[in-house]
Image (tube, rainbow, N blue to C red; front, side, top):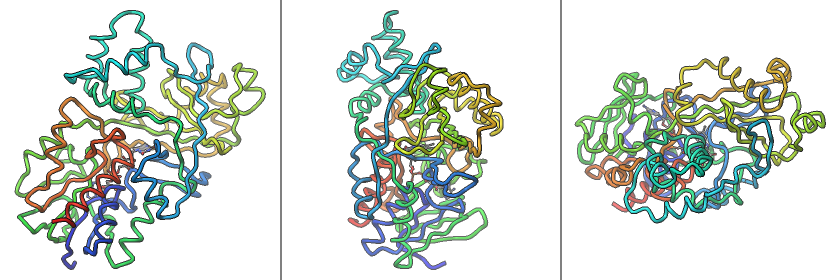
Length: 435
Ligand SMILES: Cc1cc2nc3c(=O)[nH]c(=O)nc-3n(C[C@H](O)[C@H](O)[C@H](O)COP(=O)(O)OP(=O)(O)OC[C@H]3O[C@@H](n4cnc5c(N)ncnc54)[C@H](O)[C@@H]3O)c2cc1C
């Protein structure tokens, strides 16, 4: 394999964005990807089983996010507002606009005044210990586990405050033909000038010295370049040496690998269920549950699989279940069949339909257990109280030769998102080109 200017290890959003910007700046790039597909945590399935189109990984653009929207507009990729009628099911009752939380504004204010960071559980126990705040504490923890997929006893209160103050529920989008279009655009730009993406390349070792990198794959193939962009998930970089995707560095880089350990990496299991029709639209269900759910976007509950959403504004009869944080860590080794059963039992309790009947309406299902996935080993990053400092170490290239890149290397309020990954890729490319 001929030597290139840069090796990019990992063909997810961050690695491809780095490669795309390097390509446009005239650099020669080789991208090494462990899987037999590109996209990493972006994985749109189309015409698979009965799913015409569904996202196993990233699905939404969470706000008017500059890097993502600029890229989509440049590529001419269509996106549209995701329908968002919010419902909550608790104590046998459906209520709309869940979750309106008593005391939330007070919580945000207190978080913005916080001078010394601490885990969110400690923050709640310190400032919101009173019994009247019990529902507030429960909702905050539910949010940290469910949305941030984090361990609340480790998650930074300050970072969560920053995230919650910058929420933009009004502007949530879906890509009309799936996130894969964006990934394909980046990859096609790289390939159009002869830069290569080598699939099935599990990189096991990176041997480096100033101005020269050699990457060796699990099947012994060696690639060389002047520099390397390490665009791997945090879960892989934190993995034990015996993990299939684990990577070693020669010489070792203890300061950086120690910093990697200071950033949290959550857990997620996403469940996709396609039914023969959108049964939650049925008049019989409206009567049975006492709520009109035809425009339901999101549904929050306290069931074992607690969060659900539809494909609203489309009528596609798919319900997506979401189990994040400690509960997903606990279920990491649960079989797909058992996860399906758990999901159906949760829905059965919510919609008051027996699990067997629900199962008979099911025409396709898919369990995306990203925490068990060997090339991800988790969901996405969250901040611990030590993360901000750790990131400063990882932002710095090693000897102008090794560059870290990924959704976890981002300082803005949209940590862990596609926006964060794209921003990181763009930043690293700019660093390399500017050298
Ligand atoms: C279930 C789920 C839902 C999500 N929903 C959203 C959402 O709605 N909106 C949003 O903005 N974000 C969402 N995210 C987060 C978003 O998907 C990620 O932040 C982003 O895609 C990460 O990009 P990345 O390039 O940093 O990492 P990745 O996409 O993980 O890319 C890393 C690549 O490295 C490869 N790799 C691993 N080990 C090796 C090795 N040893 N050698 C070579 N290659 C290797 C992997 O296969 C992968 O392709 C979601 C994530 C998950 C898991």
